[in-house]
Length: 108
Image (cartoon, rainbow, N blue to C red; front, side, top):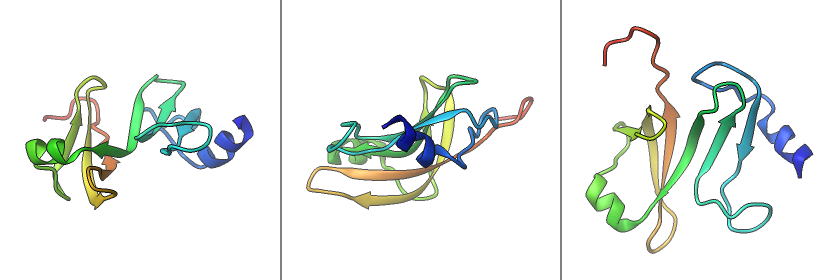
């Protein structure tokens, strides 16, 4: 399992600190994890970078998520552009995210 994680994470870089020391956690209900989200965990800066985030139909109505909008992860203090919204089931939507790497001294 550890070797599989390293092979999948190969070529991935933390968008916040540009470290290659990342661990990939793949979304899925079967196998080594039962995560609803897909993300990277950086060993250097200890930030979590989301690639896919699962939302319920209720969360979609309340958040009004759509492609091109900004998704904020307040606990990690990171922001993402929503690339794609995919309906994955009766009550599940997947938000495909791209990190917005903010440079030091940038005005928000």
